[in-house]
Image 1 (cartoon, one colour):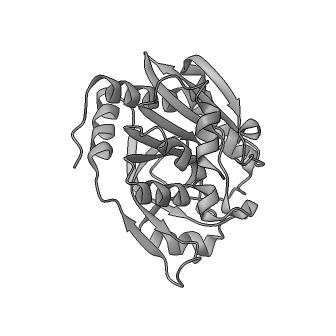
Image 2: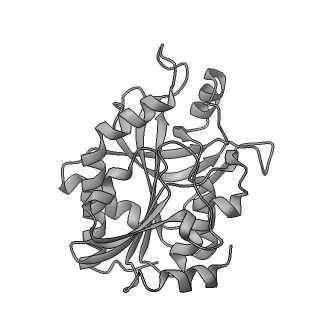
Amino acid sequence: MNLKLIKNFLKPYIKTDPKVCILLGSGLNYFAKNITNKVTIPYNKIPTFYDTSVEGHIGELIYGEIDNIPVLCGKGRFHHYEGYTFDEVGSIIEIFNTFQPELCIITNSSGCLDLNWPIGSLMISNKIIDFSFTKSNQPQHHNFKSLIYFETTKKLAIKNKTQLYSGAYTYTTGPSYETPAEIREIMSIGGKAVGMSTFPEYLKCKALNLNFIIISCLTNYGAGLINEKIKHKDVLVNADKSKKTFANLLSEIIRNIGHQKIQKK
């Protein structure tokens, strides 16, 4: 991937640097409907960039505005299980970084590991557990350096009467869903949500010193927690049921960023 070539390609489309960049996960594309004055750029038209292949990941950059605040949105992501390296999965964050946004919002659809949390709920991550065993033979806990935007988002959710849970997002490589035994192990080490994305993008944000938050739409219970088989189509259906609540929360976060400067640590 050639970032200089990509930045030059995007210049005619992106007139003002976006204040917020958003990466949308499986079935969460409805948010893009809130963007006005939008310009759509398919991933496969961007030179030296990659294209998506998983259902629910359209593969488009959307540039536009939320209440006159410039935003850049990635509809669709890449996954390590598709054959991409961690660096390639995180390449969308590198593109975001060329515009130096105030905040990156990383989203995903994930499995819920708390039966007290209804399906369709939203969760903001306060840490990530790497359960992929790609870099170690033990699960690795990644605590976030700064929780400024985490706390601000929780306050916004309360203000807007949106139920927003918080907990540890757990990364597995996929593409198969986790086994009941794996789910029990993940729960025993503190995992509250589980999915096959987000960790490589988090690593890229960390490396580039970008502010970020991670929001999950909890679309199914982990294997073995209830007597139902997990299907990808059900994940998409359940994500769709929460689309308005999810989109409204993202819009509120963007308005807050646009209308007041949060002091960075």
